[in-house]
Image (cartoon, rainbow, N blue to C red; front, side, top):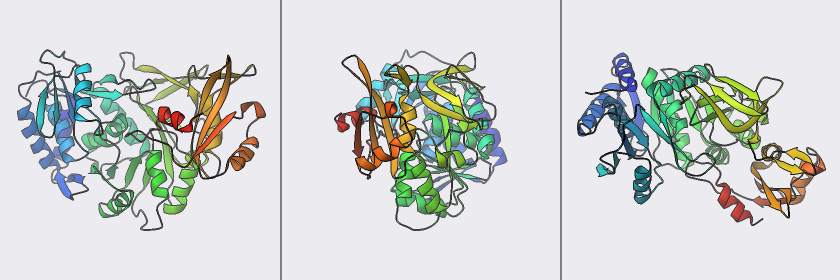
Length: 437
């Protein structure tokens, strides 16, 4: 079938071991996919891809589900580079992005759209699309070996087993979804319960109905679930994982009180895959760190700069220096301090916004916080916004007990809810505009 990817050969071996096993469920329709059914559908789709040259990029937009998994596997069977795009992106935006990133074609709603017949070829199995800190789309070409290594690191560290069932509420095509959902399926047959569109209460019902044991989510999702009125317990759920943004201790504590389950902080990047994980959930409850490095991952911190080395890092050297700054705490856990170059000079003293963010986010009654630097009249000042129903007086009083006066934000805006992107991340630009600071 051409230059098939190692992801495809790995999946074929897994499918033979999992003969007859249900490996994917479309939660909204209750459709179940066995390993054989998923393979057959992938082979059928691969026939439709026969005219494309191995190594070309194929952009596609599909909702979470067995069809997404089958199409991704079909691309691997043909040796094509999968380029999954956000479901929230309109058709015109998808076509523009596919052109910008030199895709051969774009596939959505059962139709192929010609993009670039002369598109270059790559040895990548998947091209991750990330906006990073620049908000500009960036393509990260990952070989099969990078993705498989990330999946092994994640599964080994988090204890994700072949008999588990993963809830796919996060997009399968994001770096987080690839490492925590797609790779455990390909490597060991860990079933994926796919949620395409949903209301928060539906997730609770699906966890019980489909016997979900592992739930990778984002802080915004856990915050909504924690705020639900008392209802069914998350029976059978063993592990809840939060990544993509900072999880507030308030959310972790309320979720734990509501469902009796600790949320585990997880930190990673598109370039490196998974980096660190709070194995016990204790660090997430207190907000003290993002845990310790994953198995198979080496993290070094020099002068505050975080560098990651592992077989999952999508660079020739296997190393990547992050724009994030960090330090180790006394427990050997990684503490994030902000982005490189984002420090403020306040009265001749250095302070980083994330330090203040963490202090605000740790306050009881605060579900999220954002701190940034304002440059006015040649001076740096700290501006902050808190997602809370508390009064300004209560926030400032509690914060004064934690921070010296020179670290206190000069401007503070309180909002009941922060604006968020389709990925569940904070929309900082909109927040600052809404804050009108």
